[in-house]
Image (cartoon, rainbow, N blue to C red; front, top):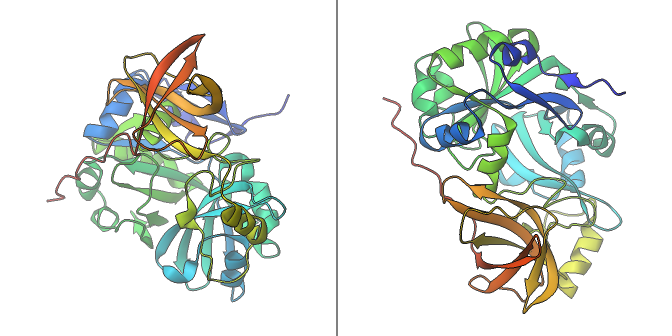
Length: 359
């Protein structure tokens, strides 16, 4: 048996009675005694803290770092600059499949923290080549999310509470060197903090004492689905391109060559064979991944992610369908043999709650 990796906050989760599950090779909290539904609602209405230490951190430094990233990734870092974060894709050079979707934290002129999904870290290190170092085990990452996140954090760390959306900065908390970014994966306002592993429990305890509720990966998944955000292994992955996923905005065609550019350009010119769409169904029955989507009564697509939306009170899904299926159309999802009508809608399913004033 393969031993699961554990977060620097593992003991803290167990002390809180968290339900732990395997995720990307890590033993991580799925939920706490309050339950996924309560955690989901707390993020939409107040503020929660997630431990997302299972995500990778690949650090690349030096004068050649920017050039390596520009060739490896689809987006153009020159559009942002130091002190900013950017969402981007790493593509397969042969068929333009999305090997991983990534957030890059451009920490300073020659320091980049590349944040891959948990199971893809080694592949990202290989794609970036010499000079890329996996530093995942040196830190924990706390995601502070929700409309009250900045207000609550201001009481213990005003500087971090002021970080702008998709901005990145080195900061200290109680003399501890951290990196803070205005990023997240819930659709709500918030930020993420990389803190040295040994100091993570102290920051976690301080955040809980400030009023944040602990939340697990179950709530994180329902929140990202309501926000219409893709998940690698579902909406992105082998055989799925950026264009099929409707994320062409992360491709900078005019920056020069990058891995997978030629096959992605060929697909762009030929037109995609399928397109990711957002679907809603009436009633509380949740659609599920791998269920068949019917167009005009015939199998034509597949659900990639589906669940009950706590905020909308109905089933929602992301699904690949023919490119002719447009927003406003009605299709159906085969839910255990029953063709359940589904409306094609424009994501997100739920818009962010306005952030509360800090002071």
